[in-house]
Image: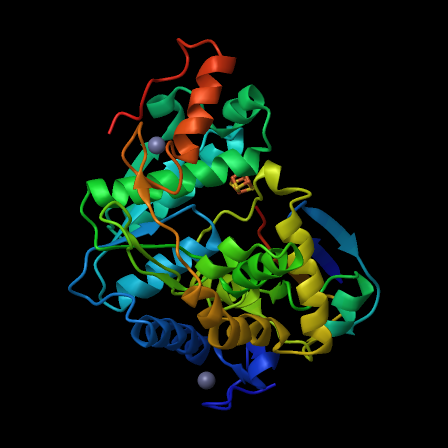
Length: 311
Length: 65
Ligand code: SF4
Ligand SMILES: [Zn+2]
Ligand SMILES: [Zn+2]
């Protein structure tokens, strides 16, 4: 197999684009995809201060690498989740990347700030780790982006993540979630930062290939709580479809974004209040983050759980 | 050939003979859409041939949660 551009031996084959590339032209292809996504959706410019949620996995490190090379001003934010050894290694990979590339990194430790990390929190409130984990991530990414006055928060969500989320939302007809699923969410409240997903057109295999070619040392190990997650089942289903019919994942997501989401959006009439407890936007009286931690305080030794986040 | 599957759980397998990358993945029941085959730090495509004396690594690209 030959590179479409230079006819040297190809390293990465892209069946959904009916093409293949050598390492140099593959890296160029990935970088071009990202800049096209940023411009197409007006995600941000080089004048903006951009905060990137960095887990230490392939997606966030690849995105940090791509944007830094393109000259954007991107600071990393790593949330230490308190999931045993997995979290320790994630922090190591993130720190190592930031140090080698001399990038700014903000670290936030859930356990020392709130009193409990994800593992102990989920035991105390008897909820699946991923639900508490997701809520903490969304809350602190937004809160820290506001606190440090960033213009936009970006995440490494890829095409597989987005297609799997869409599949789950369609399977359960989650109208609210469908109306919010987008590569870009503008701020709709002074306490909500703009959010973007510049990798949403690239698959996991494509992003992992980028990291492997550039020897970006990312965390290959999975979070122990991911086993059995619905998202993995949906990704597997979609990848089986993709093999038989290349381009399926992309068509599924792009078709939704261009044809279906606009009609969902026009029905969007959520009014946002400020949480009675923390002031962050919520559709109710008290936000789900505060309700979760209130529950943790009731069910755990109250001395362990901090009253509010120390921000 | 010597095959090392790197993640999610590291394991090593020895196979006799040579195979194309897509045949190796099919043999191991691994989806080519979510796996990458590497030989000597070089990424291989589906039609590349892995010789009997080669050592390859397979990386799963899927992350969950
Ligand atoms: S798998 Fe679940 S618990 Fe683990 S990092 Fe992802 S969301 Fe959090
Ligand atoms: Zn080339
Ligand atoms: Zn609140």
